[in-house]
Image (cartoon, rainbow over all chains, first blue to last red; front, side, top):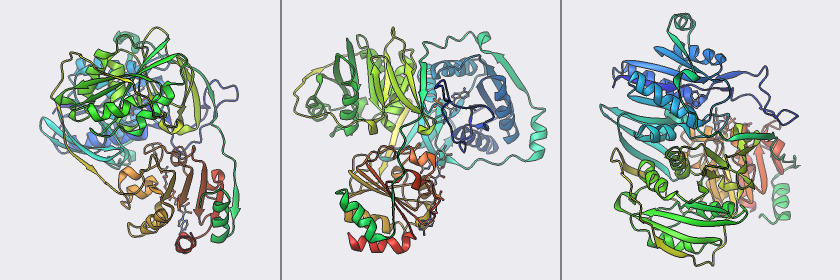
Length: 249
Length: 312
Ligand SMILES: Cc1cc2nc3c(=O)[nH]c(=O)nc-3n(C[C@H](O)[C@H](O)[C@H](O)COP(=O)(O)OP(=O)(O)OC[C@H]3O[C@@H](n4cnc5c(N)ncnc54)[C@H](O)[C@@H]3O)c2cc1C
Ligand SMILES: Nc1ncnc2c1ncn2[C@@H]1O[C@H](COP(=O)(O)O)[C@@H](O)[C@H]1O
């Protein structure tokens, strides 16, 4: 295997309590901490481990978004990626468009393996990897919690509702990763310095000539239905009484 | 009028309840005419169950040996070939549907509406984003097919009692051989299924060990409840992954949910918000879980649970 492509999406950090703007036009992102999508960090860690084990030559990180996504790509380079690609888009691009962009880079750079997160924690779409596999005509292994690379095949343990499923795929393939796959490394200061010298290529989305397809429009946003804070009981007897009261025990 | 195709989830013999919930969602679209597609190596038993669901017009059988297991790259081309004439194609937002439906959407050159929690009109839907911290109203384009997954915790199962027509569908599609399922490990238990149980008891990091989790099982047995866990408890190896509840685990809506030694992180809460009654037992009175609990008890679980198990 030669080249691994890893998607890094810039998202609101998972620790931030996201709030809907009072006019319902979106969620508050001003001054909010932004990070690499946590699943994508795990995808990158996996790619780096494959490379470190001598099974890949190059790890390339890619992000589609505004110029700000450079920060996340630089973090990816500091973690150990060899080079980065920023595909600069004006508005937000739907998953189909992202998958088509990835496909055009796969063709251009002869990518052998794509590692993505199983979902982006902002849109919670969970569809980009599956779409890419469809467009590329290559296998998909979603929700991976363990991966064994064996030359031209991979054995992937997938977390599914019923338990675990072990799937074998021929490479090239798309693998989307779950949280338990690995624990991403921390970046050290010298790595951040080194990352500044690594190549970061910027491409305008328009220059790729990719048709994003029909977009799903976001009309409005609202906070979720609130649950009221209930009653506190003092002891087990109080708890049992409260449950009996509701016919639940 | 909306012509809706629903992809059945099943294990070869039993129709998963997620399908009946997907039908319930589709039936809220005005003037919906609903077909269910059963892709299987032997579809008979599952098709018969699908035909019983209220609001279903036809059950279409796509039978071939390759459909023995649910591999997205094998099922999706057949579904795409069947798609002509349908305005909507829906599947459940379970790991089956999440794996399959985006593949179908891409073959049909559309984006997918993920996790539909409410239907506003034939092309307008509500769906949760940011781990349920916000609800977006989205509109799919009117001139292309709508491919969507249904957030099953938002819907009750469609009733039975119907007897829809069962027909064979003939589609031609080239199927790849690049993906093979080697093994399925499912923690078969005789406890109620987490996703359909009326009562669920869940434990968190505080249980401290696999043995500690025994208290949770004992309480669940007393209540005839299903058992779940926080991600921290799964990561620590106290329980297997299929028991995880939350943004990246299962989304559930039981009548009663009891969270024990779970702090109540947003990623966990999003999986239980639709529960009827939420009970929390935690020794920290500041734990965020109490903000949404209907009944809260501040106490040490190791003292409380034996007493509670005894009292029930
Ligand atoms: C992208 C992403 C996705 C995630 N998805 C999920 C998900 O799907 N599901 C999920 O659950 N988490 C998820 N998480 C993790 C989540 O953020 C929390 O870390 C996790 O839910 C914490 O689990 P916990 O409540 O068991 O542990 P903790 O947060 O450590 O809480 C333990 C609680 O136990 C209490 N306690 C300790 N000892 C006792 C005792 N003796 N008696 C009573 N109470 C006691 C403590 O007061 C504390 O409140 C996700 C995180 C990320 C970043
Ligand atoms: N704008 C983006 N830039 C880079 N990677 C992305 C982008 N959008 C999605 N991805 C990748 O696709 C995965 C799934 O995203 P989604 O389908 O939006 O839930 C993410 O975890 C990323 O790896």
